[in-house]
Image (tube, rainbow, N blue to C red; front, side):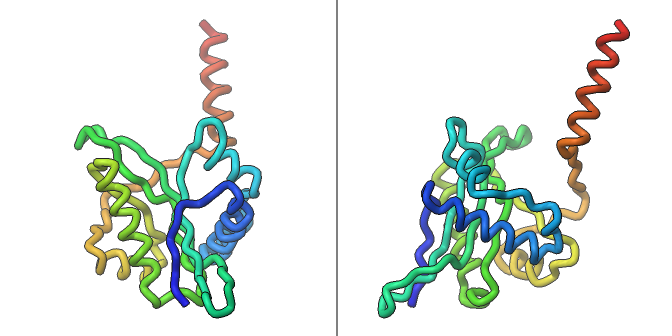
Length: 173
């Protein structure tokens, strides 16, 4: 048995959606997960792909089977300070039965290779404050956990409110 790490294909969208839902369950955020195979297909393989995905497959050559073991979904952003694009890891998830076998390290290493190939100035991601095992794992890989930066988010509802406020101000003029 071994693991193959490969770029996701359009026919993998249902598997990716299932893995995203497993991650949401792990993070205690299942009620917020809206991923569907169709949304994944549009995001990764539509006319203007928004992200990329690596899948790790557990391959059993003797049984001639393969099953999903991990995924990493990432996209490119831009850093004004280093004046280069960066690789942003949105999600990394290793299924419980595949943990502790070096697969997470291999996934990060593969993403690092992609970042270097793409001449990225940074490779960044976030980690939940309660996930101490992930924090320790990332530190062992050489990552610094930045304490002085907080995530700011406008969800779809807040974006609608913001647009309405803008429309109201425009109407007042």
